[in-house]
Length: 191
Image (tube, rainbow, N blue to C red; front, side):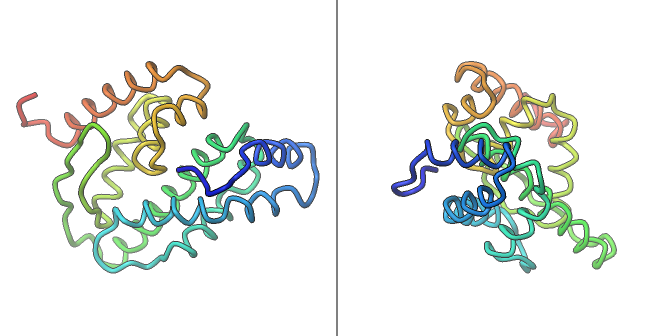
């Protein structure tokens, strides 16, 4: 998920400037990262099934509002995208709750396939809520690894940079989280 011609150093500089209180830094950062944020939103919306209540642009804008000052905590581009992915997931979960409340509990979720590189499957509101509940039970770093891989489409090296750990640690956390999630969703299945 690298922006075309994006100067990674400029992203880090703008994050530092925003953290130091420069008023226009976050605005310039969002402008610079907007296409990356839209790609991230498209990826997240690709997991939704059924009638969509959000498009990529709306998801970017709603997640930016949800982010608030949390964006300034980012150390670099990868960390910023990881924080944005979490905010987008939260927006999607909020919308899933709203849609489920509107339906009054109808519907079901489809089987989710866990693969080495990604998850396949589409989520209806029940599925998104079930996934959110499962992620809440993971260890914090494992949850961040899943969010980075699944929601942000980040590679292990990008996640490692965002979390400040080795790629090997990210790989171990991904394997553990994937196994735990599989047991969570399919307790009757043979391991």
